[in-house]
Image (tube, rainbow, N blue to C red; front, side):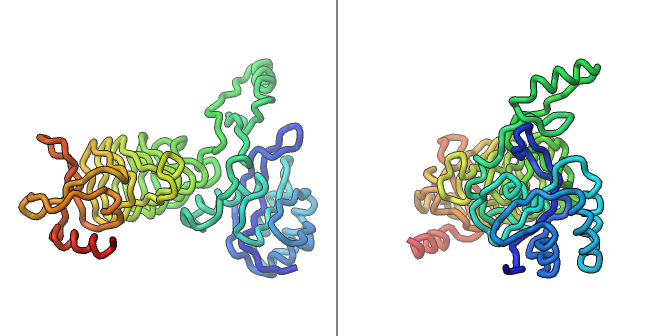
Length: 344
């Protein structure tokens, strides 16, 4: 068995009454773990290779903690704590970054993103949705929907309230990890699997989906959809939107470059290059017809917005008299037009 792994993590989670995993919490996931750590974990837990999620006991957790004391002090300390658990434990081994096959594997990859160990689009999330059960996220943690009514009654009979915060496949990120150097005004609006770079502020109306996020620093008052990554120094104004691959973007990966501004209630369906500005209220899709203007506001050419994808130093605006979408650039529009022709 090879001791070279893509990732490994030891977690504690929640199962329903049938023993199916609802969620898993990994306090210290590892990317490219040391071979000695992998070898000792395999010996204690019984790992034979491949991508596997293996349930283990509190006794095994204690044994592995002892075995790792001279190898990885942080993991040894974590396993010492896991040995005290009354909830189910799982060790997840990923020999390679392949399509997902289990709920613990899915949760590990979401953790890798939110712990900033991997950036959006940096790992395979193929097959994730069937492996994330739709559960009730409550004041007592994850609850199977089929068991919720009984749990609510049980709480009431004890004079307590089982509060349901959401019913969803994804939990909020801050219940699993709070990255250093961030502000999140409403934690329910950032899903586990989001990558929130240092210096990022997510205001109350901001939203960041899984496999998307920000390089930081930046201000997010709009929507960062799944798969969208926002470059450093960029701001998303209140109510603005970025089109993710799940919401009509097809296979186009939408991104926002560095130093960009998307105005309030605006939106993009194309990747933005560095230092782009989209006027408030203007939504640009790939097929939007755009009037390319020169420095004197004379029309140079009519192009589709997709032709301007990734180009730096652009200002997108709507003509308040004609309603036409216009684009100006800090460099000559004639030069930009020639560059566009060069890539036809």
